[in-house]
Each structure stands twice: as C-alpha cells, then as structure tokens.
Image 1 (cartoon, rainbow, N blue to C red):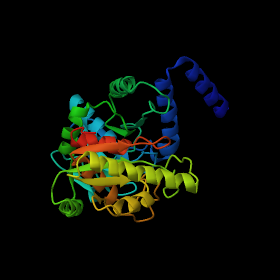
Image 2: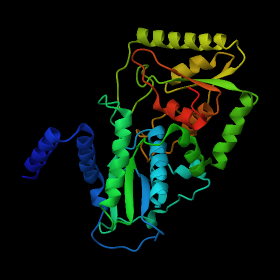
Image 3: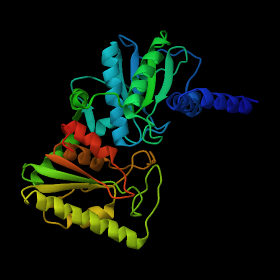
Image 4: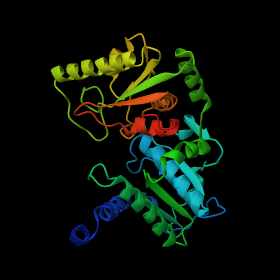
Length: 340
C-alpha cells in the first residue's frame, strides 16, 4: 500500500512541480531512506550552541560527490549561516577525517560526534543537490532555487536546533568563494609540508596548469558515476592529442613557465611527466565518493592537485569530444582568483 501511495505521490509531483522542486522532493525521500534509521524519538542531551546550527554532513550515509562538490557545499552553507546569524559546523568523516588535510582557520567549524543530535524533536536532515548539468537547466535559476529553499527550510522549522545538510549548493558568487574558503580552511601541517615540497619543484616561480578529466575513457580510473571505456586505439589517440596540446600551450607561452598537469588518468599522468617542462603530484588517483571507508587511503594528492591548480598563473581546462568538463579544476580556479 505504501509503495502504491508513493508512486501516486511521485506521479502527481512530476505532473505539477517544476523539475527542480520535484528533484528536491525525490532526493529528500531518498535521504530519509538512507539516514532515517539513525534518528530517534528519544531525547539525548548533546552540545548546546548559541544559535540554531547548520551542520555540513559528510558521513558516508548518503552520496556526497567529489572533493569539489563537498567543498562547495561547505562554503555555500557557511555563507548562508553567516547571513542568517546561525552557527555553522562541518562533520566530515567519510572516507577520511577532513582534519587530516584541512583545519580551521578564522572560523571554528569543528564538531564532535557526541555533539550531534539525532533526536527528531530538535534535528532535521535535508539534502539540496545540483541538477542543472544533468537536465540542461539554468545554473543561475538553480542557484536562486537553492537559496530560497534553504530559507524556506529554516523558516518552516523554528523549533529545530540542528539542521543536517547534505549539499553541493552553488549560490555563492565567484568573487566571494576564495575569501570564504580562507575563512574556513588552512592546510594541515602534513599537507603544508607537501605543498612546500612541490613549490620547490618549480623554484617558487609562476607556472601554468592544465587539467584533463577523462573519467573512465582510458580504462585506468573508476568514476563514481560510471561511463564508457574507449578501445585501445582510441585511448592511444586521446593521449597523443592531449600530449600535443601540452606542447602547444608550452610553445604559445614561449617556454617561459613550467606546466603543472593534473588528470584522473594515471597512464596520461605518466606520459605527460616524461616532458622536461611538466611537473605533477605523485600519489594515488581516486574518486572519494567511490572509496570504501574500511581501506586506509592517502587522499593528499587530490588536495595537492586542487591547491597547486589554485596557485598557478593560469588554468587550462582541456576537453576533447567525450571528455568531461572538470568541476574540480573550475573549483580550484575560484580559489585562485578565476584565471581559467
């Protein structure tokens, strides 16, 4: 009976709701099925905050997306909390503890597990995703929808003390993005040591960056969203064309700057690294939403790639036919001032 009722609700909403409103409803139905069992009707005393609190949840109980999605969610939720005069916290434990790579800078966003309330009377889980690329919608309209929906959620739940957000919202202006990131984050001691090491590689001189997102095309990377794998001949051609593009960029810039290359393909990284004017970050290439939390993995390469991209004088986002426009490098460009 519940199944029939749900299908009826779904059909009615599809008929009368906008695409964004329908996806918001469907995602939150899915969220409840993933995290609902963690919430209880039994009240438990937890940490008290000076104001209602917005918590960015990265706990592995619901799909979070890649690093760019997660950081975007943190930054946008923080911006919203500031505007509403609310406390803001980040609970990021999956598939690693965020403090291993980024720690608090100007704002203290730390929260321990025993400070999180799962009492239905004062906590509320909600997801607010992004669908404009998937459904060819307006990015600006979706950003406006996300901001309005956040306000609606807060205003319609005045008794809630903790809002548990699973989001990759994107309404923050590009000009504010880097500033908000710096308010929240600073590299951990271990990550900063690695940043300093790679800075020495190019003698602290200006450098260019080139980002290549092949997804699964070259057959050496498992993407969280899947995708096709090219034939051996096609893979070879994609690699050759991309290497040629690196040569072209180097020549167009008169060979005056080294080139930092990042990619989700280890085969391409290996080939590009053979060029004397190219440098890369070593380490395992992973998609953090695809990893098992039971396996200890070093994710420093992903953070290093992002921060090294952000510090470059210009980022070339490289795409050929079936390649993917990398949100990761666009996110890095925002952190570095938008030279892309």
